[in-house]
Length: 409
Image 1 (cartoon, rainbow, N blue to C red):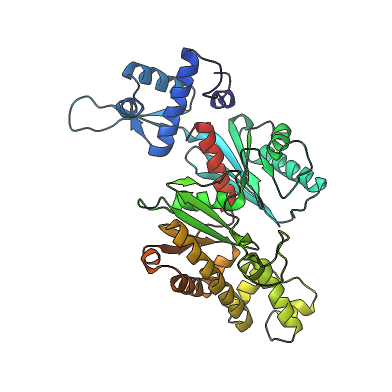
Image 2 (image 1 turned 90 degrees about the vertical axis):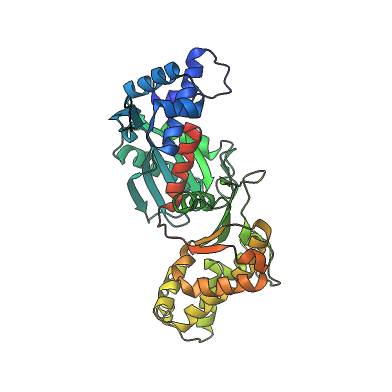
């Protein structure tokens, strides 16, 4: 084996055939099985992968020699010979996840078992659709790869999540940096010399939420991302749903209201125009201008921008205006969520993003409205929960997705 990267980038559809190629595919299947199921014996691998004992024994030993798999010794059994147990050597392979947000970049390094090895946030970053911003993104990623503390040769993939419409297959964003003939994945990959995958931020966070928080009965989940925009991630039968071009989940652009407010997409009346963080920010500024009392008036008078996080903090400090605006958003989005659960009949709706930090101020009116406008038969079987994942969920989720793609899950 020339390198781990070369080994994992072998494609099953490539023209290269023969026993070496076949064995490499089996090795990837062994690693994928251990990544999902944990430690196992040779007999378990033989049974699950339908490969002969001599072949499994030979290939597992080669993986041990390559320091990808470790021999954990004998396991206790009721009688007979005690078999050896094998597991993944997590320090052999790493993945990087990076979230390119509107006002920050977040970075994580994960191992084969999805454990976070290190994490970092850059709050000085601002996403704008300019070549200089793309250059900074590339420089930031290069710097993190160099300084993350992991041997570069052991990093098999970098996942990058971004806001807006993203097609993972083409590796392009259809909101930012659209003028380049090269895809974003090609641009970043050529700069850092590592395989890159591009993903939508809501879908990445949805996958992180689903993977870490699911119960045995959950295979259909809606993740509602209520940040400065509004979007959903969809899990159907345990897999992320992308749609034809990777654009599924643009929930915030449903023409839900008969208003004259122009959305960022250029159309009027979108759900985002009433319930997004940006919409709530605009509303509170207009109400302050009209003389409505709020503790955020001092910020406005100082000429400071009022962010949705400031509004949530004010609500937690019993600011009536902030509470009213968040509750109003919860009620309106709850009616839209009723449409979702009537359509998809999910086991769980997970609410995340900045607005989820408002807790019951958001969730109580959201669930009440959903209950009012949905079919009772559907609503009563749907669980709701608030995201418990932090600022690194997007980066962690896309690190999981690039890992799965590379090892063949």
